[in-house]
Length: 205
Image: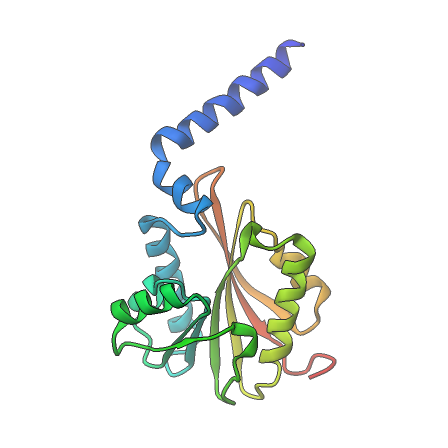
């Protein structure tokens, strides 16, 4: 083993140790499919800035797979809807959110969208789905929201180990246009936050 290889191995080892020591919360939440408090606050700040910058204050905000309601509880949207298929998480979210949002216990693929200006938030399913399944899952979501004739934006969050490449998805689907991209988190445990617009003049719409 040459000297350069040893240096690379030592560097990678130090990076991993740094993550374990200083970013334990990020790691434990990442592998449980959750966001740490600091990561969540950054995502919420980005969401609020996007809503303000693109005048989406009166849009319906829909959190697809809202979990226990952490994000939808803090987003402060006038018209918020949270969809969650897991009944236990749905009940936790309902208790936490109260009357701040409309919560629905359902499969997000079965939801019927209102024909109104809509902002959709979705966190990447990570390794819970295979890469091919994740891509098909996103395509079904996009097919569903394409029935909305009003303005539609999506805030899509993917991670280092996520199964969905948002850039690749947008490049292959003419209906999608990435407006903004932000990287948050640490060097290893990273979140990519995309603001995507549904094109109304794309083929098939």
